[in-house]
Image (cartoon, rainbow, N blue to C red; front, side, top):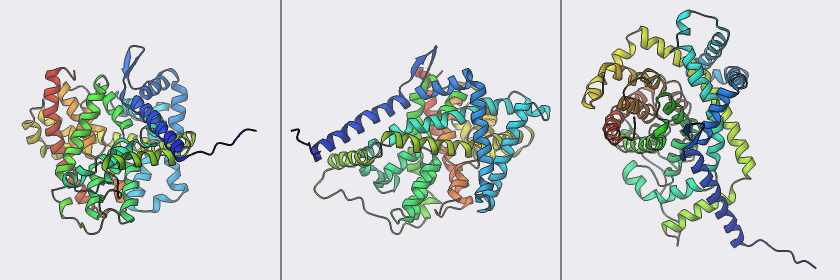
Length: 442
């Protein structure tokens, strides 16, 4: 007669440790280990996206076009376009993006739109790449953030969050998730925690404007555009440090420093547990309580597809509008004038052109990368960092913030964007000059 073995707490904890270790290591490999395939060195899911875009182009175009159709139609089907003026504007932009994609694919429209740095670049290098990388990156992200690594690191970061970033310890999880994941998911988390009373208005604003930037998957697209993929790890981690350093400064500056800071929660550790014990408890608890791997992958893929469908047509529409404004109007020249002194102080080449391109990031975070893709290495690096570290832009993060209950006005966000852009370009320029001298970028 065979005895039944009853699972013990020890075996359950061992299983959780295995999930935490194995899945987190897989996530780290997928995001941070460049691998050479076919003479090209980059991370795994970028290889996959490149293969689809080049070797399976008809299938890739059909998939991305389907994403754009869904993104353009869904606001009118579910009625979300009526939520606000901003929602209506961006719903119209998604429709415009779909129309522009169809025009490009059918060769219909004014000749100016078919210049190589207009629709051909926007569709082939951005829309097609984003439509593939974001869903693939969302799947890879499941391993990185779904099985306890984020929680473990978050508890260990608690002692530095309050004195440096003026946010509670548990916000470390939110901050890193927002940075590594996506601004849309990050803002949903932040808004939910704020509404639960676990963040003050100021704390929620710090996270929304300081950490909720584009995802690591989007950073790959920026790095590809600016030819920085050979230095991916240096670019990613230096951008991470710069973005968090800028947030540490802006958290103490107006307008955020003047926001209401009543309420919130304490950072006390569980009774009888030291920090390392609490960190492992948090990580193992998440690993133990996480759904089956296939379920996590399914949910992440669904969210990635939903995000890509919303962003891809907007990128095409806002990107084209931004490029046309940059080429044929003085809008970004005027805004860029405010950045010229800082670009000059940073010792960057062609201060006016560089400042103008960086200023266009307020419209769409990809625009600086598009306009500066042929610049010298330091300028390209600065553009790549500033595109991410400035956090706020009209084609994505700003509408998302306005859709939350976090009490940030449009004027406040534009002010934060300017301060973040100035600080980011100064820090990135300093790092970029050193990196070029050391041969880390070329």
